[in-house]
Length: 313
Image (cartoon, rainbow, N blue to C red; front, top):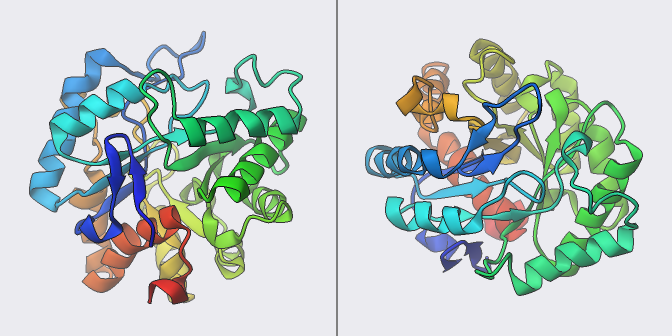
């Protein structure tokens, strides 16, 4: 496996001895007219840092994949500070979220121009700090089929991934459209094992999860604890069905903290809900520690490095 690109430099996968959170936000701004709470900025950095440091101490948290991309209030300098102060390596991202959050640059830009933008960030780094992104994501769509602008941004993500070797993590709004996302990305020559289809725990469709896994993509159960969207009881049932079908090696897990109200300092369940609540329920349902290590450590490492299961073995 090649090194993972983090906001503080390259990281050997062999150095990642504990679990990873595969889809989080440590610094973002998704505020729109009706929702002023979808923000994590400098005012919240100390609380974010404290949570990560505590999870490193209590559960061995060894990596966070931070999927705030272009147009999402991405702040790589802030991520670097949080990573250094918490002692937890952080992977930054590039790409474009789903259409309602596309910045003006997407507008009339063609796929070639959009691809060039991503490849430049991946090659030269993000912003004045020149931080190298380690993943393309969370690149998004909404509905069962991507919109025309989303087709362009997803196609650009796929082409940039093929050109640079990075993997692609998606945002499938409420879990919908994953099949169409994977088909589009694969049609551009991106192998399914370098694709993670997001928010599948919001879609109560075990057959869809099996289909994605059978094609070789990672299936993200990445909104654990967001009970207003889906109950953890349903998430547990869906995940156990996917494990029973033999696809533990296709699962990625996370909490997708995406607003300051989710922080523990503000009474939310925080980044640690996966470890404190959901994994104990998995264990109680009979899932062994090796399978949990596979889903929380080995799978994210294989996804980020683009390694096939048989190669990792």
